[in-house]
Image (cartoon, rainbow, N blue to C red):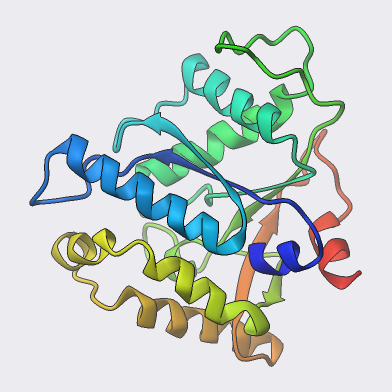
Length: 228
């Protein structure tokens, strides 16, 4: 979906919450963080996107005011019209905390008196950006039950680029095999994307849910961009 937006002329900023500093059984935290940042930078470069790392620690993302300020500052610097983030219900606590912090930050970015207390802070946005959650892993919650989605984007034409970007994250492979019992994550991505694609009659798809609670925007700007 990011690649499709890029094709439409949208500037893209990719932000990781952590540098993956615990995702290894062979390196130190400093070594794996350095590797993961470079892999993420290379993946973003494949798309012509800017990359930021917010430098939270793995398994240590807290829903508190410090985290809210950091994420708010990131969004103010990027100044997006659309924000895509992790799902509120997923297998990993960091993903769920990210969803909450991004939700809060999208509200806070346009509050003039909310100070991020970061170095050289960006000015507030004029309005709350459109917020979307990506699919949870395999589309299920902690109990293996399906998580609702609002729509599926046909990503067939951009899928090779998605795989190229994922392949940049090579250090993830050994970790996923050890911790998750998952090998060949590229094949896993293909399988799940094909399942979503079947629903709409395409080769590959990505599912999203839009945050439309008060006072977030209700019009589906993501689909409007993609269909323009």
